[in-house]
Length: 198
Image 1 (cartoon, one colour):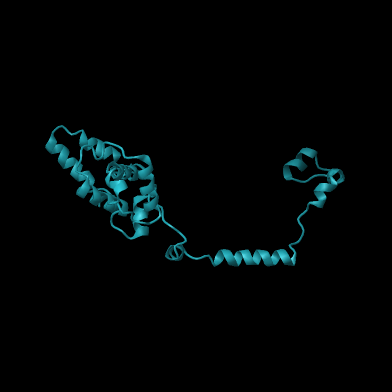
Image 2 (image 1 turned 60 degrees about the horizontal axis):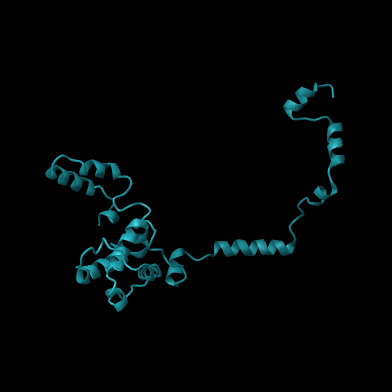
């Protein structure tokens, strides 16, 4: 108590009478809530949970068992192709093959299909199924297949031509002549990441 109070506060020491004063004022409910040692029962539970977390199956094993399904729409293109083992997304392959065979109509990518048909197709591809696009429901609404393609591209987190190359594509299409524009666009396309380039 021979030190001045300001020095005691700066260093972090308090006079013993202050500590006693605070101790006396602590409510009973607070002192009762002090953590107690873990009981044997809880200790076993914690051990079980730790073992359970460490023995979780890998993502690949969950996929093989059909428990885990990979998203198709809204998933990064590179990540999706890596997980699926394809060079090009199956949804695009199926849709473009169908459109080349049946979709030579006006406005195939301009007109929208029926929303419920688009959602049915989306759900099937997201469930890792390949829908039969030759069903009457889709043949009579060919535009839903074109709309599904557009939906896939629209939901990519990083667009097909990538955010990183946006400025370069913008400069390329602004070139003065058609010939110069073609050369510049070709040059930028070569810089796309392989999944986007394919």
